[in-house]
View 1 (cartoon, helix red, strand yellow):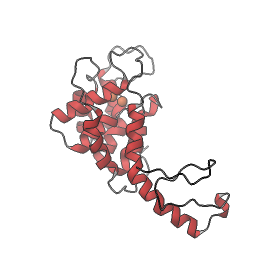
View 2 (view 1 turned 60 degrees about the vertical axis):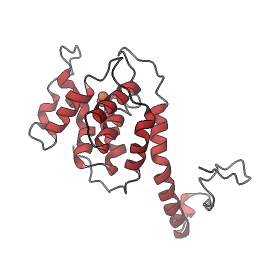
View 3 (view 1 turned 90 degrees about the horizontal axis):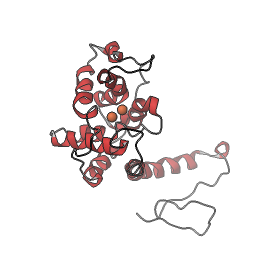
View 4 (view 1 turned 180 degrees about the horizontal axis):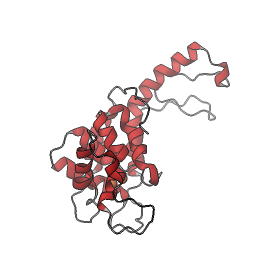
Length: 211
Ligand SMILES: [Fe+2]
Ligand SMILES: [Fe+2]
């Protein structure tokens, strides 16, 4: 990747040669030429940069401390993805496993919808639903929880949903148990090309989130 410095230290460098800044001082002053330029340059930027940024965010947490689990959230994510890979799951499933908790430390109480929003445009409806709801399915594996508001049976409200069984299976096999030292952890480099291929898919426009 080549970053071009254009001699004005007040400006951020552009991603690559041939890109140009838009100059109007505020959005109100932008016209069609500016929007066309941004649309084209953003298409190139997103295709090249989104996966790299996601991987940087994940990797930035590699050495994070744990609040009690024996491995931190990064290692949990890697263990889940490694287990899915070793189980012969397809590439999308492995990436879903790797990133299902990428929002866990950023917005813990809504980390499922966080991951669904991130990956939703690039994955199947089944994967998006799994990401969105997995945190409620995990409660099924949490017994004798002391919080009054905690609902061990939260997943039952979706019993019968077309994606219920697959989500329950993901949580049971690849989520609730991948929190131990000694479990296989493939290097992030193994997953990086998969993440890049997934985010290089043409993003689809999503329907509004379910209530
Ligand atoms: Fe989670
Ligand atoms: Fe998890």
